[in-house]
Every structure is written in structure tokens, then in C-alpha cells.
Length: 201
Length: 299
Image (cartoon, helix red, strand yellow):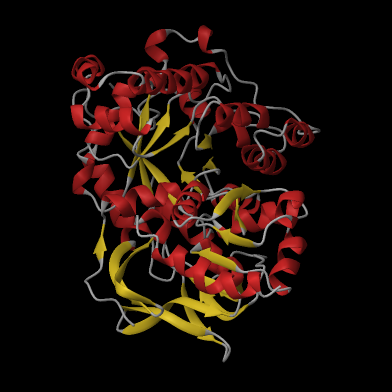
């Protein structure tokens, strides 16, 4: 199984390192030929508006969107979550997303960088202890379609907010497991999300 | 299924992590809301809000300070991407003000007139992360030791002359490669020579890179300049005067963003370099007397 990390902008190297550590063949992708050749994709943390604009400028947007719709497993962290969401609140003017996840995501929901934080949280499907989660100008999930499962939540401003969700082939987290040194979310993606869809072809 | 520990802000991972998310991107200097929107629309990963771009600071002279909080807040309200702002070297109260405004990163910058010729800001005391300039590895490691969560190699800001940026990017990577080739018992003397903490020197020798993200800045005026910095090993690029002192800022800004992503693809860099109009006129660093060179500030 070949996993491509979308390498238009963001913390590509950290995702590659985490994927390689869980034993899969992972490499950066930023051309149509490279994206056609992968079985699964990771959309990294970064600036969601920048990544979307670059994908549009270089004719990758429809290709990626098409592959998501046709069932390619994709995991997005932070900016990646925004890019997988069908709807975005507090979007930049004209901001586009690939979509696929039936959720509404609020950008920069926890505040500015001074509000960025780390915490430990339970992740449904990862049973061997809490995971270390790093939130950086992070989004959260506000509205969730019936087909979406919430895998993790955090409390903020007096409420619990969904920060990890899955819908079939798509996995998204508000936080950045790739910079925590804890590879269990990447392992979950490879073993749970990718396995069925890739081997079932 | 919820969080089990209190939320901790301002950790090294949170500060350094913010810079990781900027990698492969362009951070643009802007002086008003209109420019901020152009930068965001062109694909900037962040913007630097300041009252005068370095080219104007250079032309007008005088003491250059932190920007007016009103101006910074207007820009924060106008865009959704991260907003950075500059404090003078050693001016910890300007940094406190910028933190209270909720800017996303503070640049302790030699482009402004230094406020302290001995001490830089103790950046560990702040929740907000800092980026600092460096001309060599020792300077970079001293800044990291003071709490900088991101380094930018210095060029000669406001010139449109990329030569100093080239020199300093090469210098930092050469010194990292030199450390990597050393025996462990040679690192003590290396640390002494670099005037940097031994633990950081040892870490760089072992990993072959800085422990924080390394951008480059100063004198970058064209997509080709930006792509060259990326090929020399920068994680991303600051473009200051180069964009809004040019003939067609929106087009040049977007071109720099594309050139940074596809820095290894000469065809893309060639395509985005077409028809950009006039680049900033600029000034050769060699024509600037040494006491007026901004990169020499900081130590």
C-alpha cells in the first residue's frame, strides 16, 4: 500500500516520519501523476487556504476531490480536517474545500496562537491509553451528519467539542499527532481506515 | 472519550509546532488591510504586519519601532491566516504588548532599531512564540537557547539583493554539516567556538538540523530568489519589500507562493516568472556602508 502525503505546503515531513514508523510505504505527492499512483492520502497540517489555492492553481483540486469521492482513504490533520469538511465556518472569502466529510468545521475555533495547547485525550479505537494531542490554531467540528462517528472530544468554553471524526474512508483530527511522537493515530489510519478499503478492491 | 488532562498553553511543542505548519510557505510583509487581503488571496501562509517595509525604513531612516496596535488589530480582523508582528531586539515590553494583542508570532527583528545592545528578549517567559534572525549557526543556537521557536536566516532586508540571504543560508547549513561530521568529544570545542550551549550543539550534530524550523528572509524579490532559498535548504521564505514594492504585487505574491511549493521544478518557476512586471528597484548590498546594514544587528 502506497500512502502519499499531500506536499503543497505544511508539515509534510512529520507525517512521512510517522507513517514510515508504522511500517508503510509513504512519500510526498504534489503532481497529478503522483496522486494518481497512490492508494491512500494524508493531508497535513498547514494553512488550509494556501493548500486549496495551490491545488486549484495546479489542476489537482478536482483530481483529489474525485479520488476522495471514489473511496480513497484519506486522513487530514488540522488544515487537512478543514479541507475534508463539506462546510467551513469562519472561512476566508471564497475558501474551497475538497469535502467528503459531512461535517461543519469552525476554523481557528479555540482562538489564536496564544490559545494553542496540548492535552491528553481518549480516542475511540485506540485502547492502550490516552493519546498526546497538540492543538495549534485548531479547528473543531460543530455539526455532524448521521454517517459520521466522533472518535475524540475536548472540553473548551464549557462544552465538549468533537476533535476527531471518521466517516467511512475519511479520518480527520483537529490536532497534530504527527508532531507528538505518538504514532497511534497514524497506525489507526493504516490498520483501520486503509485496510478494508484497500484490500477490498 | 474526552480529554483527561488540563490544557497546557505555550509549551515548546506548541510554539515550535506552529512554525512547522508554516513550512513550504511564504510569509509576506504588509502595511495595511488592503495589502493583507492581497497576501491572503495570493496564498501566503502568514503575514507580517508592520508600519513601514524595510525598503522604506532604509530610505527614511530614523528609529524604527513596533507598529501601532490599532494598525495590527485592523489587519488581524481583515484576514484569517496567522498575523505576525515585529518587536525591537531586547524590547520585552513591545513583546508584552504584541502578546496582549494576540498576534500569532513575534519577530524579534534587526529590521527595527535595537532597544538593547547586550540582551535579547527572554522568550521563555512568553506564551506567544518568537522567530529570530541569525547569520550563522552560533547565533541561531543562542536565540533558540533564549526560547526562539523558529529561526530565519538574515539577509539584507529592504534591498532586493538576495546575496546576503544566500551567504547566511549557506553558512548555517555548512556549520550544521561540519558538526554532523565531528566525533562527540570534538563537540565541546565546537560549542565553545560557536558560543552556543553544548546540549544544543550535540542535538544539532546528532540530527543534522536545527531543533526548530528554519526560514530565510531579506532581499528576496523574485520567484527564482525564493526557489533558490528552498533549494539551499530553507523550510520557507519571508518576502518583505519585494512584493509590495513591485509593479504587480498580487501576481508577484502568487508567483512566489507557487515557486516555493515547486522549488525543484524549473519549468514551474519559469512559468510563474513570466510577465510579472517590474521587480522592486532595490539596492546592491555592496553599496550600503557597513554601519547601515541591518543584518549586522544582533549577536
